[in-house]
Image 1 (tube, rainbow, N blue to C red):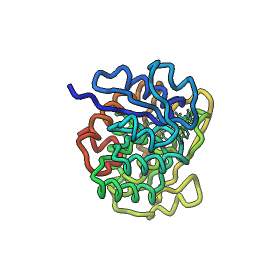
Image 2: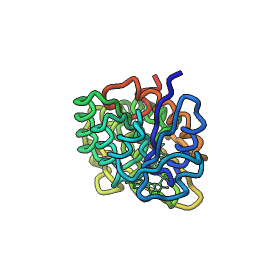
Image 3: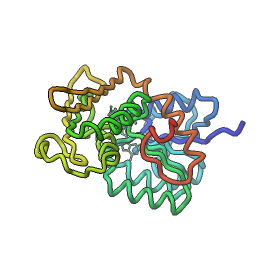
Image 4: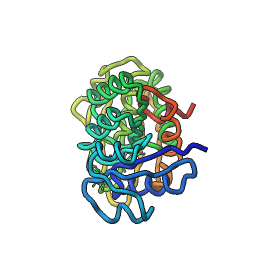
Length: 255
Ligand SMILES: NC(=O)C1=CN([C@@H]2O[C@H](COP(=O)(O)OP(=O)(O)OC[C@H]3O[C@@H](n4cnc5c(N)ncnc54)[C@H](O)[C@@H]3O)[C@@H](O)[C@H]2O)C=CC1
Ligand SMILES: O=C(O)C1=N[C@H](C(=O)O)C[C@H](O)C1
């Protein structure tokens, strides 16, 4: 069996540590390095002998990863993903916060170099299904708002999950920005207001509310544990090996 050579960016983070563990324990993967902001021992403990790199050039040159699992923050995600593609490393991006413009540029770069790239702001199957169901419902019930609720350690808003849900709903309805009733409340993405809650005790939760005359449809997904992300992450790392362009959303690869 040919193993997939994987590197993880952000290995000391909550998600990065989970990715390091998944890549070490998965029999199909060989964790060949981690990309950190600094040389820090904690990044090395799980594997014992996983090299730490602080720049993409040396990582690409010495560790020769096939795939980079990107789990840093909204500031680092774009340069890391761009540089990985330029080095022929396929990014699997779990980090949230890429702008539409950045996603567009990455799409062009990915196609130009024939290097697959999967953006999955949410690796959980339930969230992918929620996005699909919301895209179906919006054609029938166009008045919709999103509430995303997260732990108080989450720095960015709106969540990547909520932003992708809104964009998919816009794509499905072909109704760009037509829902002016929500203007000024929450963060507007594709004309859909997104309300962001950050509280201790929460992990990751999202509701999409559809209002109609005398009725309300609520679609809700809850992640109670970060284990909910592991199987989707593993799937994306395998699947990106078969791709030569950018895929935006786990829903596009779960069939
Ligand atoms: N796709 C998904 O299913 C999920 C995605 N996320 C997203 O993943 C990202 C990370 O989340 P957490 O792990 O909770 O955050 P965290 O704050 O615990 O970890 C981020 C780590 O990235 C490191 N980092 C920042 N810039 C870096 C760089 N240039 N190179 C290497 N490392 C760098 C930081 O030092 C930190 O250790 C966030 O954008 C979050 O929204 C979180 C949960 C699930
Ligand atoms: O920071 C988090 O925790 C999460 N971030 C992602 C997002 O922004 O959507 C995915 C999930 O919601 C957890």
